Image (cartoon, rainbow, N blue to C red; front, side):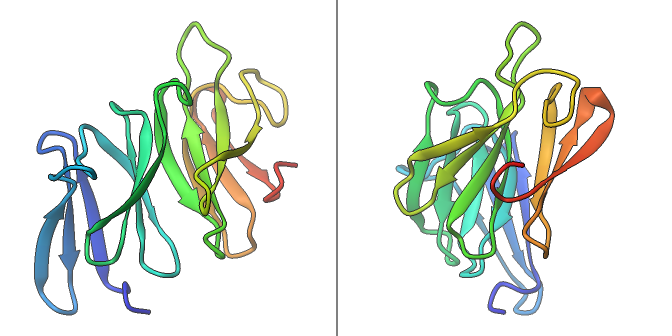
Length: 167
């Protein structure tokens, strides 16, 4: 895989992502220039084409870069998120699953699912609560090799597992 051995580090102070390509010994920084500039880079994921997806907590969007660090697209926005924290992309790079942590006084603790091709919101998974499929300050997400979603539900002190369709 072309991006194997590449490490990404989000830096909220420098407002960028550091890219360390271990096999080649190359280093670069991305997210410093418009239109792909970052204000508060948080969670990240890489798809099978080595495109990098970065959650920007301040701009409340997900910014997508190609394997060279060039801006491809962005989706989301302040009308779509309360507090975005992390992103995971499915194996086919069809959907981006974005953790919206929510806040103390809101029920918008959820996973927002975006169609990567269009950047449109496809559906939501969950809302605030303590029951199965509900969240209290979700923080992180990963898509497993089985296609299931693994969500860190921090204030419910658990990891919840979902099928790709949200069940």
